[in-house]
Length: 464
Image (cartoon, rainbow, N blue to C red):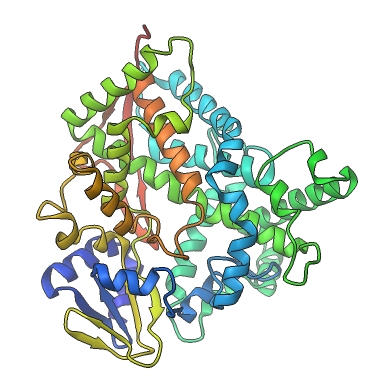
């Protein structure tokens, strides 16, 4: 109840850091759960070849009427199969094939923000970053933007529905019997419909079914896969096979599309806002980064966008993104596992019996002084530039995307492409100022560390 109370309050991002600062590397946060900060334990829990398993808490993310999802499945063999069959669609090679769709969303975002620049009006970057990431995953998962940037609104109420759903599912998933499973139950949907209560998540699901069915029918009529008129992630999903080699069911295609929307939009927007915050609150970093980006565009006077493969070659931009997302990863709750028998897990001299629920919060692990030094809580992009070997080590131990093992966030490549492009384009196009640097945002944790009310002012920069 103590742990759950803090979860409901939405301040776990502060609580988990304070716990480990006070009690050390191993902290019992519930009678049946231990929170850890330890590099070796992170590798043992999330690395390649580890025999640990996810806990039953992940069942809270099972969506009725679809199929087993990559994130929620607890079966190791099933996870291997699911990850293998979608890995091509999530590869960097594939994402860069879709980069024109992503760039189109950013072009529209810059146009919308430019219309609001130089007016003195306040712009809420919490809204606009979410709008563009939802449009990007709409392009990739459904074949068209969702219209959030174009309209400047939460089309279909998708963003609020997912925000609300994640709050309830993540927290209710920790209670006996997992009452969260009723949130997605058809019976509840029918009751709400009968009472006339709006259900944005149900509307989104029905919209998703319509889009998926249309693409599957289009795929059936098109003949060979190469003749599909549009290449995107949905194109890959409709060609998937099930474990017996038969064409994937509608539910299997649907869960993959919904996974991107549910987990690939908010997480990326959180990273964008983290980068913008740290840059805007560190003037020396702002000037150095903007100068590097300007020099890139000055050498290409006719170029509008910036390809990811070129953005990632800008060393200071790369360091800033790595450092900002280290300090503010999207996931804050513990990534829960159960060490297997026999032996359990030993951490910092503490023996944790097999079967105990243990987990590591990426936010806490990414500030481990044994890894990052005494200035682990400080924003210092230079730590990624001091020594290439050290930078590779940092990359191998960072838990920004859930670690580097088989359970690493499969959407990492989508997030990286978007965040690099976003930060480079924003600093090249605008001068940006936080309205209130003492209260840059309102931070709330509900599995994700979500920033609300990030108000800025923008001024268009002269080109040339």
